[in-house]
Image (tube, rainbow, N blue to C red; front, side, top):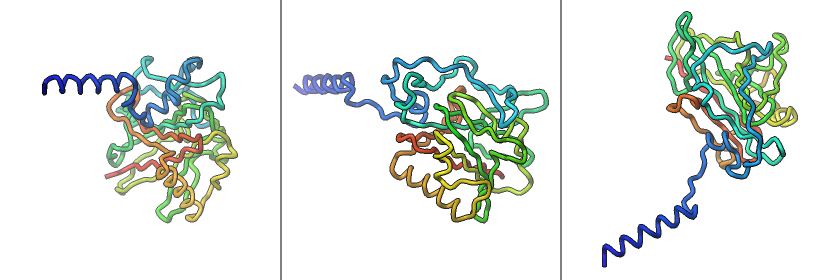
Length: 256
């Protein structure tokens, strides 16, 4: 009788899984690559990735990222408005030795004095992007866009690997250990970015308001963040909003 009971229980469990009763909840990375699951089956395939700089649109340097087998975000090109989930991902290019390609890492890595990095960004939909440096006093200053350096093209196309602020903008870690804090904002339109009161120079009050907006999104579970460190072609940090509201990601670079 006991054996029969166990067999029946196993059959019921299998039936529940087969009927989708225990379907896994997608994380930020899966939402980034396929925002609506099977509902986007009529979407056209994404175009091949395009590499652009912050201003000149020159090709980025060679980095091992998984090659042509890497996944690409599904885009609902037939009805873009139906794609509500908005996603931004970033990864860090650690400069290689002379003549060697860089290494793809995340902000979980501890950086050392003298090392140089560049920041790569990619989205699952077309939108506008801005990048800021958070100061120790609580204020923020723009890294991108930068009018003085003629880095003003803030449009980020879907599935476009782009180095910001610019291909030539390598960050070098000095001899003072600490944590460098950056803020990346990605939205569907410039109006959405402006609604956050983001500008070239932000005082501590305005900066705190933007950070609180991001915190509220996480608290409401609208903003989902996930970092991939194992699958070579997908290494990076992913942030998505279920509602399509601006994605605000804080990037902490630890330096020892």
